[in-house]
Image (cartoon, rainbow over all chains, first blue to last red; front, side):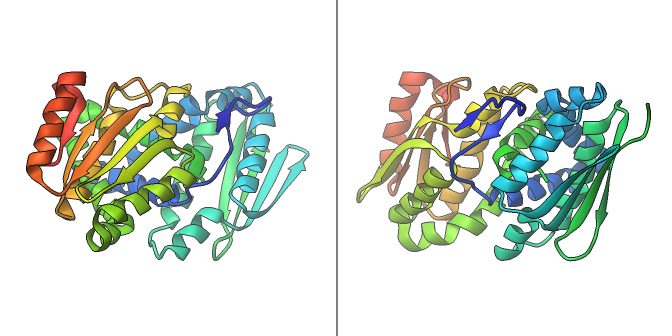
Length: 153
Length: 163
């Protein structure tokens, strides 16, 4: 049900188990509550630089193609209400209704904003050592804007 | 957002970190996961017993794209994972697997099953092979007999119980 795509390292198919969003925030909160911010950052950083090694290495080399494909593929797969616009020095991902926050609310699970914190850390890890940064702005409700921009030549 | 498809690779990174801290840290996390999973599963296990377990893992079979066979009768619920999608993803992973990845499953399942008043025998089979098998019994003597049988087949370290 998961294959290596032409651009994406991991291209998942089949059904979705959306309760894994609850597992993500619970794991993140567990690390925060018991070991602190650095412990969570270590785990998320490993995701951003080792699990998503190819995406990260492309960004370091100045290539945004896998990040943009990853955003598009998983926003579509999760049924997000979003727009992805490429700009002169990067891209803007506008999430009008985050599928993770929507699912957590539908299940009555609090603490969904931890997902936004994890996303910020993941974006930092993706961009570590690269000429890019991603700025995430929470824009109310279940929406946000993530702006990828080049900060160095 | 970490896509729900990729949560297990995040889970794997948490296990690696906790494993470096020590087995007690892993055990405390399994207890926390069990507490959270009880939210989704325990009521059905208590209310419908072995059928409730079948219903829970039938939903998991579909949503997590599992190749598994499962069934229940008056004494036992049995699940045989033919190809675990979770370990498969963790192995197909540029960050590499945590050697104890498989242990989380009996770690939380056993606790929730125990809270419902049943006895679990979990045969991990092998930690690099995406296959496993578990049984849930109403009677402890039936579970003890199955534990001995599974341990003879795959070794004591591969077989976990919840009592």
